[in-house]
Length: 223
Image 1 (cartoon, rainbow, N blue to C red):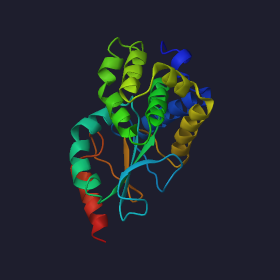
Image 2 (image 1 turned 90 degrees about the vertical axis):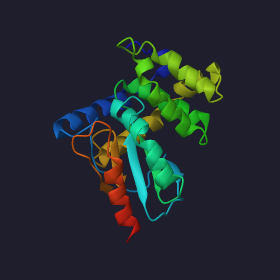
Image 3 (image 1 turned 30 degrees about the vertical axis):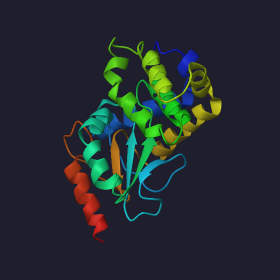
């Protein structure tokens, strides 16, 4: 890869975890970038909407370098957010899994966290929407400039970004979150779980549909 460790080093163990997830997704033959199942609150969760302990919790496992995740953010997130997150009907939890190229994804996640909780989702969504630009050359050569530009837009200087993505503790945390997902059976991205139940839209190229999510959420709200 051309995205050098100088500015986006990811631990070898994390890269192996991402590769293992990709392999499991291929074996599972699931739609999108993969699928899986998961459950309760986890270390490092980033959340919006209702507070912890809400009647309904929707968990998304996703990667900033997953094309299907980007498609879901573009096609479904606005309606999902306005219907369920902005109204505090659900607690929406986002969990990070670095997918190929894993070092680019890991750097993106670290930059989002360094930007702060109030800007985290803006940075994640901006990176997803910039995938075409990042990989326009057919490799990762354009990723550095895009990530730094997005980080700058979130108020981080180049020096702060460099420090952020070279932080060994931050790299280890990305690694651990990916391994935690693998341990509980998540096999790819995007994966959506509503109150512990994995919701899948067969054949979808942009993650679980709004219709399927709404059906599961409304059933839980009605209990």
